[in-house]
Length: 358
Image (cartoon, rainbow, N blue to C red):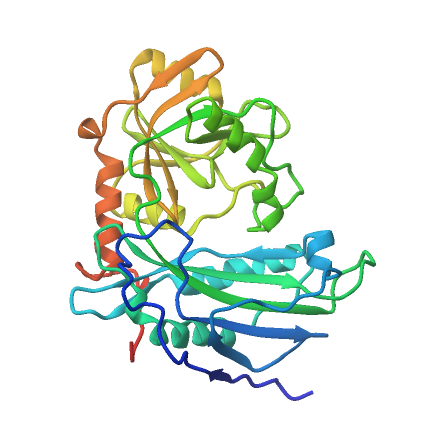
């Protein structure tokens, strides 16, 4: 059988919704750009991808994604350089991860031509939506879900892939306060914790809401077997600096392999910092706090890049992490990543993809 070829068609909006909008000051994730990309797959064959005006999708209430959760997504950002050039940060890593997530949920792979080239053309078209305020970006949300009109429990034969974008500012304006989740678990060995599956996030919402009701920004997740080992914080990977060693939980199938996480580890190792990817027991964190060797704690993810952690509630104990002014690694990492993403410094890793024509 001959290899399938792919093409992308574009339909521009007649009038941009950008007029009169201050994209440097909009609520996070609520104002969407002019266009979106849409492609469908049926029995393994992909349609022509289309870039169309942002709007509603027509879907049946019987589509299998609504019933059985075959739905994955990605999160990434576009930035602007000082010269106004549109920039993407590690898009191929997002492409690889969405297909790993799709494979875990028994979904066919998305072709690279549709994901990468479609994304490039979409950003070219909506480059004016990229904000320029420090800490802001154009958030990119690829979504991929099953659309069989059937409630039979089996992998779907039809799927829709779409990419939508929205201008965003800082996700966290202040350092975050966490509370350990003792009553809920994010993931179990053999489950979907390493996939960016929509259901993972739905299952986290109750714990998140209860944390906020008690004055915290989010939760610190523990492992599903022993309830002793730290895994993630909220929707981010988590790092601790203990006695000048940067420690982060190892990827063992229950933790999302974050692209920001990987970037942080690369930067630290290239700077000669001692880094350990291993299990971190909650008791170890408590003892480090008692000994005064817990120097920093921060989350790493696409939305926040680096989110400094201020306090951690563990039962009736409160761990107060030293203030940002006394921290070394988190602030340096945030600055380094933002400078690479916006082409203010040389990118020795090939992480930044320049969007020609934008």
